Image (cartoon, rainbow, N blue to C red; front, top):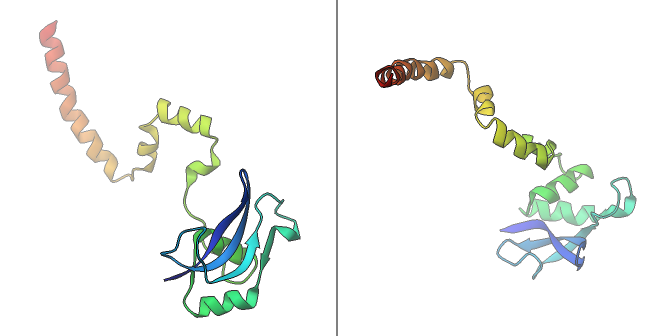
Length: 143
């Protein structure tokens, strides 16, 4: 299966990527069929030199059945070569990591209660009602 994907180049901590057409079984930085562009993530997003694509060749390979990876699909969508893919659902991405850890420690059950539909809420209350008298009975016996 053909893929449009990124192949890493550059030095340590200074990545530069080639957009290549490769068989999905080949290694990421290994053999590829054709180089169709480049991507430099270190440059600001408004710079022209950040992304360079050969539009005609990319359209040709897409026509041949090549599938872009998620990152390449976003790059192609930003350059109007394909429709922009939908954003994934990662609500924790916007929250700083320190605050994410605090929320997990403090209220791990709170997000579950928010996410639960109203239909499930009575189901949770019913076992609590059954469990409450059972919990009180041993407490009374101990006294």
